Length: 130
Image (cartoon, rainbow, N blue to C red):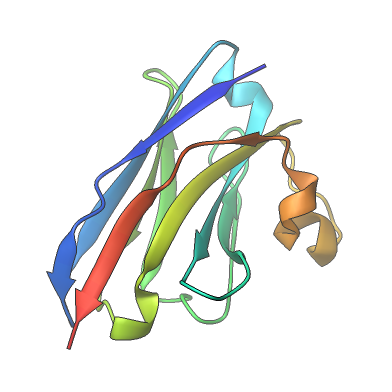
């Protein structure tokens, strides 16, 4: 099992940059592929990005491609989401999620469905004003 705690959420202006962190504990973190999701009020939880256990492979939602970057430092059991050129529509609670197995699955659905991830953090709020 792995426990996840997000941090770094804040109020930002459109065009700003933010870094979110996800700290993991309880298991060998490099054995887990890790994703970021977000959920805006009244909307379903939305996939943002996934990073492999080694950090060598990533996959992004089209809505954030080129603006957001996922990375990880397994030496300190952390995953990061660097967000740039923020937009008001990026406003949401951002969640870190993990599943055992370091390799990204070939199926897009397996990568992007919240149901694929048994471990979740509590979320961190990002609010982007125009």
